[in-house]
Amino acid sequence: MKAILLTGPRTVTVAETAPPEPGPDEVLVRVTLLGLCGTDLGFYDGSSNYLHDGLKSYPFVPGHEWVGTVTGLGPHADPALAGQRVAGHNFRTCGRCPHCRAGRIRYCPDRSEIGVLGPLPGAGAQLITAPVSTLTRIPDALSDAAAALLEPTAAAVHAVDRLAVTARDRVAVLGAGTLGLAAAQVARHMGAPTVVFDPQPTARELAHGLGLRAEAVPTDADEEAYDAVIEASGSVAAVRSAVRMVASGGRVAQLGTPHRAVDGFDAAGLVIRDVTVHGVLSGIGYWDRLVTLVESGAVDLDALVDGVFPLDDLDAAFARLADGGRARPKVLVQVDPALGDVTGAPVPAASRDTAAGARR
Image (cartoon, rainbow, N blue to C red; front, side, top):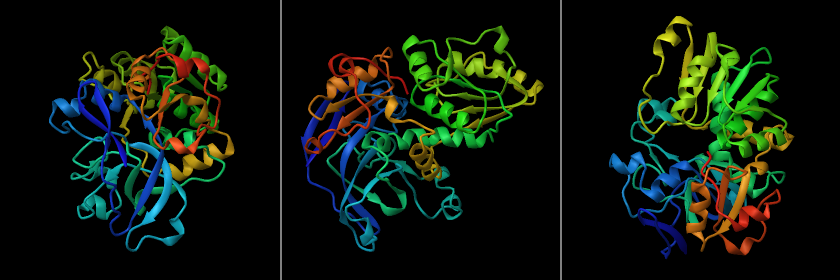
């Protein structure tokens, strides 16, 4: 089979490798689409903290956002899974620690994350194995493109849930990338008046196209004006703004991941206004709810896809990912070239022919 192999900064190849064999309670999946995000870009250009901190090292197979079809069954796997379209989360846990035994698998201290953390290869291959417990079946109503976006956007559902958003809340979302636009759509579905903030005009245009209110940057009128604030970009400026924008007694969800400590973070302001801050890790446990939202039309994931690149054009895919000015945030790689058109929404010609963006 073919697999994507990162061997160093800006050095990516498609290698021939032996296909894996599914173990007990695992399945073999033929991957259709692979999603690329800011984490993958950090691995590609060498800037990732995982690399610098020794948590990941070249060479390795990247990828943790995927959709595919079950083509083989390991021992004890449900035969009904054969031929099913599936996607799955990327956590692989020990199964023995107190967190795992209590069902809190995202907190497992010995967890690995395929393509991100630990030695396991990622989903950037034509064939992968996956534990049955990590899988979500994809209904016919969802395109492959939407299914490939479930892994990152389930975290947005988690953020809205952690904030317990209701129709009475004024909600601000900082960042109109994949996470921010998903979170804003979920908050809107809850009936909450929601405003998305992003300095990029193209990002705001996409938000407007999704029926969302979008502004460039917070103003004085936005200070302490929101009951719930979702920081979805990871930028230093946005992290600081979230503290200024949340109202007394309000809640903040830190969904984006800053790449360094944030100087000037106003912790005293959080204390004085009795604000609750949630760090949001992963969307495990929220996939089924997200699938229902996408099926109902409340959340549009297809609209977030900027382009689908062939497996033999990976440098162009990463170049697109690195340019923050593209019109839509998500870049996908078509891993199986025999599957034809895989996106549920038209991909603009410009997104196939030019390089644009790394918006999460």
